[in-house]
Amino acid sequence: MAEPWLHIVGIGEDGMDGLLPATRAIVEAAEVIVGGDRHHRLSDSLHAERVAWPSPFDALIEMLRSMRGRRVVVLATGDPLWFSVGARIGRAIDPAEIIYHPQVSAFQLAAARMGWSLPDVETLTVHGRPVEQMIAFVQPRARLLILTTGEDTPARIAEFLESRGFGESRMTVLAAMGGPDEARFDGLAESWSQEVPAFNTLAVECVAGPDAVVSSRVPGLDDGLFEHDGTMTKREVRAATLARLMPMRGALLWDIGAGCGSIAVEWMRGARDARAVGIEPRADRRAMAAANALALGVPKLDLVDGRAPAALKGLEAPDAVFIGGGLAPDTFDAAWAALRPLGRLVCNAVTLESEAVLLDLHARHGGDLVRMQVSRAVPVGGLTGWRPMMPVTQWSLVKR
Image (cartoon, rainbow, N blue to C red):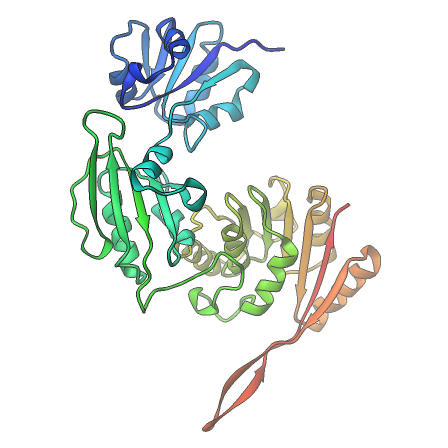
């Protein structure tokens, strides 16, 4: 079994004085210390070899591997495994070779400053990531703690909140928590004008105005929230489809024939860290899918130009597959072969030709068949009547 040689140490604004004696001894005995400028400044009394974060940052892993056999310490902020570098390193280097030394995290400090219970808030990061990732979490009375990218990020978030009808939301920027230069800045999103330090944590208490755009993470968003050309899985069918696909944390969906991306977008919103690949041959629809993903808070949607089954080759094995367009036996065969055990596959058919393929597949593989007919109330002259949408036949099954 591998022996630990790499120590990943969380450090706060109180620097070396805030470390436990045993952790401090490890840092003081290090041959090499890796970290950012701030981390080196907080430990400037030490004489080990200093190494800055590499550029590009992805080179970090190979750089660390080249140091195996030396006493190496990586300095991180707070808890190295909470939206921090420790998680990335632990995915690439055998955890048996690593010892983590957590410090109080920025989230814990911010919750204490705000008087909020951590289990009752959403902890998010937009540090080095699109600000749009927070969109799905903006809901009435929600409390958010957000690690930000820089001094301009709170202002960008304030503009976003105001544009969605949450301008009365209360915002607090907390900087240098736990150190002698700790600072706090308060205000409302609609009038935010504070100049804040670059390294900060943002607390938001969401307050919805009468015109607020409210969107649940439960599948079944209003069709009007999506940019589309009329060809899309409608709201009611979409909700039933996602119920069968069962979004789960970190799980991967293949959305075959993604169109405007409504299924993939709602899959990613439905569980934290859920991922999706949309396979769509039309450039205009891929553009719509990308725009919808950004507008609805899942900018990491991956879009592939191509047609199934050829476009499926080389993709990571999925946890769920949705075939909404281009249903054919060879597409099903390729998707079913790639699907992980306990994976879910759902096919929706609208045309008679697709339904015939679906019924044949059901006869050979089993699963559940459902036929959905949805009608919506619309004006009929001065009165109201029902307008039926095209019926949808849905086949779903779980891979055992």
